[in-house]
Image (tube, rainbow, N blue to C red):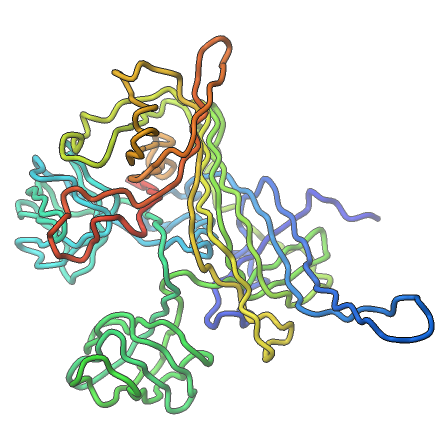
Length: 499
């Protein structure tokens, strides 16, 4: 009997060591992706051999680097349960493999904002919870009645405390306690891992190069580490650190680091940002397995249709063999995905304090929108790897998109002036209306790159391609705090609301 193309499964598991196949590729919980399209392609390098001999017949080539690509499409929808306790949708794992950090967030009711917006990624000084107790998730503009935050400190925000943005200087007073409300994804620029650790005193400073006495693995410390905090680091060489081994500092940028420290009894090493994935594509019993895979993602919006995410992954080919479809797989999805309709889209310029209010956002009429994160995937070649390819890395990011608004007078929405002047604008796109199945896509730095006219049943439209940039933080200039005037790792923020 022939194999059937409808019987396809994809399994994805985060790795502990980039390029080393993870366990769990036969586990049903790792195969619950709801896919509308899936395919895999081998990329086997043929090394031609130009042998000098009497016959002109070519000799057989030799296989060089062995890689594979997976292309997947899924609907943007919540989890089956839809509650915060159910976690993020399973497709969030693939977003993480595309360089999008995933974390939970809390919602806090607030009074009037002064000096806004609060900027995505900035830390908040909280009168009760303490300095740097929370990090802003998605820009919060003047007129907003809630602010979304990622808890950072030991104490959650309570009602009645003054919140001050460390970078923007924006202020607002909470009128309710922070409550878990969903999950978010935003871009990152580095591969970061985390594990537990212990030191008796002192600090291991950011930028220190550390080495495991047992494993021999090396890493650069990503942020200051003290007793009680997680040890976050950029992997440099070697595999995972060994649980309980002593780590020594072989270079420190700041004198006075702790002389030595140990990983906890169990290191619990894992990726914190930009993990590599082990993935398996199964077509009715035939399988392709890759390790060290990373990818890029694009989103497609069409009115009266579900929003879809299309992923393109590339990794080192691990095997091609026969694997039965995994039984007992339960789809991680609600009964129906949200439809892109009833969406109060918000659009405005975003470079001056004169357009810092939610009330400044206008509602353009769109029927189509596309977004592409634009991650550049680069092969990390290494002769020590069995296929010549250690893992795939994301080495650059250049997000793009396009939209099709109705043509308006420039006095209404100055589309052409924004293009002519190179002005960056913001776009807020809600999808869905029910908690557990609703989302917001936010882009603070859209910059148009062209314009052409279109027609929609006799209605004049624009076709506006654009770049996704970090925008311009007009209320951060000169503050000397952790955010730059030009936004970074903020060009696309995706919010999933569970409440």
